[in-house]
Length: 282
Ligand code: PAF
Image (cartoon, rainbow, N blue to C red; front, side, top):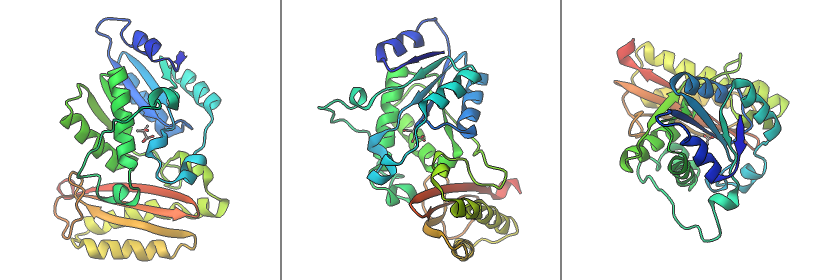
């Protein structure tokens, strides 16, 4: 496994063999089983796999979140070595954002809702770094988790609009045994918060069940979700949403597909999760 921060070295390895297909798994490190599931899917679908590890400063709208973002490069590299990853790219902030940096990628509409509304500037930071990673590495396919549903929608939009020559792949959310979506941020939960956090997935799953049973009113679904989460002493709701999965506009009536999503604070830790409902598959 080659580990490098050097862009020329990364490019050289990428283009070493003619016709070789590459999967890129962009990460911010502190890897868990969710990331490893992306790596495994990338390995199945490509000749070789590169994982990038970079805690991207420009996508954090709260300094506190950036400062407390967990890092364990040694453990990450050991996990990736064990998975048989070919290349790990560990760029540094001053390489990617040199002093005179002034070019950003901005997806203007679907970034206005949900995470975009709650975290101003977040998606501009995500699309800018992902565009840089794609531009340098030119992967055949790139892998993202469904847990960040809006991120995937925004990146798909960017790839379509800017004509990036690659395929975006979305992989299912990996969960702990009690349903909590795997996230690097879970490590910052207090013991009490960790105990209460599974309420998020329970609520999403129950909301989806209500829809499956015929509930069509998004207002009623959201009210049910709010009441259930508010029964949890440490949870502070940031948003609850029932939206169109493509446009991310809030729905009034649930007819076809719906993205049910939420963001909830447990102390300083902000967790997000989502499930997709589709009436056609019932
Ligand atoms: O999902 C993430 O971990 C990050 O937003 C990403 C895509 C690696 C960009 O920094």
